Amino acid sequence: MMLPMPRLLLHAIALASSSSGAIVVAFSPPPHASIAAAITTTRRTATNLGAASSSSSSSSYVDPLTYLRTEWVSASLVSNQIPKEADKVLQLGTEDGRLVNFVPRTVREIITSSAEPKDDGTDGGGGGGLTVSCERQLRQMSERRRSGAVIVYSNQPADNLKETPSSSVDIVVSLLAARRMNDNGLDWKRAIREAGRVLKPGGRFLFVEGATVDGESYLDYVVGLSERGGVEIKGGLEKLATGDDDGGEDAGSDDNDALDEGEVSPLFEEVGYDMVDMVLQPHVAGVAIKADDADLTPAEKERTKAQVENDRLADLSLSAYERGIKKRKRKKEPKAVGTRGV
Image (cartoon, rainbow, N blue to C red; front, side, top):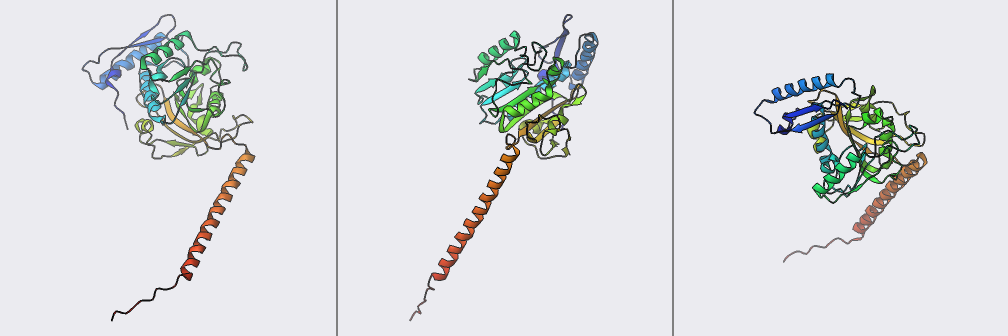
């Protein structure tokens, strides 16, 4: 199902900075032009920008059309897939303040993490931390929206959420962060596993990412951490964003050997996903739900399973006992003697 592109996105002026190759997108009221013409214009602009900035481009570069579309998908996914009871949201590789506008007003706390290069380039080194621009945008968005959510400005690296305890977060969000992590020397696979660690059982990992990161499939890795494999959302991104995932075909990967030895597989109970349409660069959006027993060791899982079985047998015994009592009562009750009318 093809989703209509918002009219605001149909007219964008993209300017390339000659020094850094960064893209600045400015909006103006859309003219009376067809969608096809607008998309064609944007494609031509993206092609020119790609050629102009080829010397400074990296794997994390996103053309204007793809950026606008993934921005719309990200807003829809985050706003619709965060349940009302979710209080804490953590973002992998916070780059700006847009998440403040995406999350529902019921969220009470937003925790940041950094995708900037680590100080000493080692696994144990500290992260580069949030940029000054990022902190400013977060503050401005929070003051403008006045949702009441507290922003925890954490400089923890996205692939080492050392400041966040295990099973303490309701939602983890990753929006176009994996390729930036890869460019800056961070481990995007470990970041996904860290997301699973800090999530509460039943918590959700929401992602909108490039289809591949350094030649590897992002979706295949997430699905590889899942118990049931991936479920493709056949109705398209509209159903994924609104939560109406009515099934699909299985897709998976046997790539579970990347897990840490201390981690128990599977990490996610189920993964729902769909490819982002109307883009020049392939991207995928999805939701992964953490398994209820993901934090348990094999021994704890066996004990839990045995306890569930004992509870089931106890319920069956109680039901049989109650049925026996009712049966005996019916036998003891004297039959009513009818009287004939004269």
